[in-house]
Image 1 (spheres, rainbow, N blue to C red):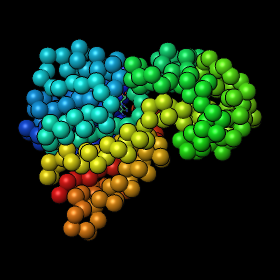
Image 2 (tube, protein in one colour):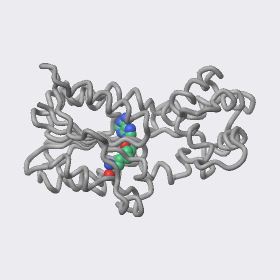
Image 3 (cartoon, rainbow, N blue to C red):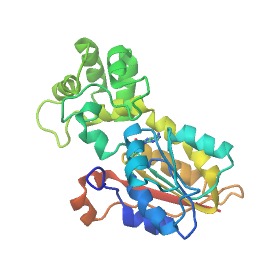
Length: 291
Ligand SMILES: C[S@@+](CC[C@H](N)C(=O)[O-])C[C@H]1O[C@@H](n2cnc3c(N)ncnc32)[C@H](O)[C@@H]1O
């Protein structure tokens, strides 16, 4: 499993979530089961636990390999819909884990179109049954909307230029077509690849990542038992800002504040982890406990 996707901040996640015997878990971004395997081994309770992911490749792996013949509930669904379903079913959890973003498999499989480092189709869907993909966004969205996405989700200073170039280059067919436009916008050397921000922005739009997160956070709190812990790992500042704001707003001194902060500052990977898993470099962990 570790070759497919190395889980990040494992030691820190266990320290903050403190899984105990017979507690139940919902992992809303189960991926390849790295975190959930370790947590469920500690709780010894799979029956009332749930593993959710919207990627069918991840779900197949969880069902047929990682948790084959284990009595855990494995569901292919986006986490907002899954959260609402669990709430409707009156489910409550001791532990909720959310490890946002894409898996290594998404990035490494050029056919998924997430990476500007390899030629691939303009896809970027985590859920391959979803209609909206990067190709539609790049070839059909109006220039103003493209520019707004690049500004808001990519924090791209050259959003105006790149949006205009996309319109002029239509139809775009591959990740190379998009990466070339970004390279032209940023001639010369820069520390990060000039396509990083644009690819992030388009990926966020394809998967509605910030909307999913913003709308799910209040439901996750409802799903926690009193004393239940929620940990969220984010990989870029836009996600982290949403999590930080939500946790702070609900963990004050007001009588109806439902949370206590477990992390005043985000927890980040130590040097050893960064050496062993460069993908962890932007990971930030925040956690709360329900009063
Ligand atoms: C960083 S990986 C999780 C890896 C996992 N913790 C492990 O140890 O293997 C993120 C996973 O979350 C899934 N994902 C991201 N956003 C999602 C959403 N809104 N709903 C459901 N799954 C989502 C992705 O498909 C991906 O498999």
